Image (cartoon, rainbow, N blue to C red; front, side, top):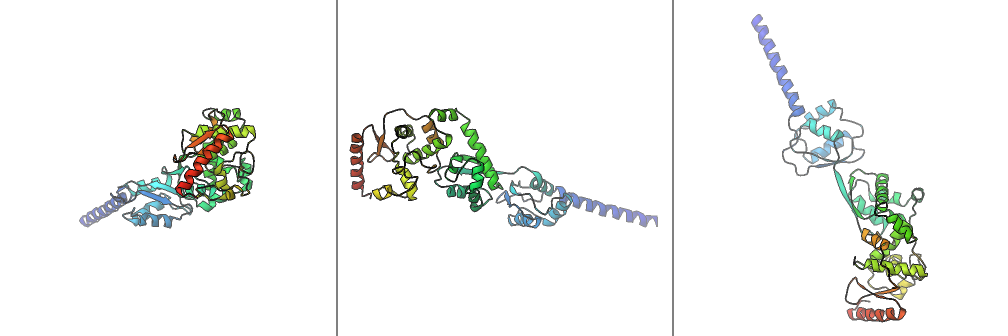
Length: 343
């Protein structure tokens, strides 16, 4: 009898040890494959636990789902609404490591590149390519007049918020979080290098500097020439002369493929048409690069009030102090356009 009892105790010990070993394996043994096609997991906002597991299975992150489910229950990872974001998973992770990371680990960031967008629709579309929020939700916020007014912007001036750069964002950034981050970056930009003081010396607000910089941006793609172009426009503003900037006409007509501005374009009635309306337009005609903003803040001092594209030198301009000099330059350019068949 004693012998049978000892055998029973021994068997139970073995069984208990086997179960303990199995549970140890479910917690600490690798449950992520040693090789992953894509280590990044994107969990959308509002996802359920079942949807998260489905994502993990689709990306072949889990070797054994049942052990993952068992531990997820005990680690209280299962929630009605799961944590969202972009997460990098390491090959060979255990269930414990994977769940801990998805539950509270550091999110991976995405890079949002903003540079030469012309319209606020394009800004929203570009940002939405990198973050979870869709372009319509972002655009709705950026067109909300009441919201913009509370932030000191209008639908015409909102483009001045965006300083071209590459920014790190969490993938699940919301529209309001996106706006607040851009607001912070804008403030940081203008607080450096005495930019606000330089704007004040020009008698301009930072928004006006940005608007003029957007014209300079579209007028010349030659960085070395932009301070000269900026100085010319500042001269015209001081003298009360119409800016007569062709890029503003292109913007007013919304014909961004326009190669030659004709009289019919100059006659298009729009507050952005600086051939018809004095001073700066109501807001930027595109995003302005940092180089163009600096070109306005450090504009070249000269007496030029006219400029015309140089024939055969794409991107460069011929400058003049008098109407006679400008007329001569313009004739040369128009002759070249006709020779090239550009109508």
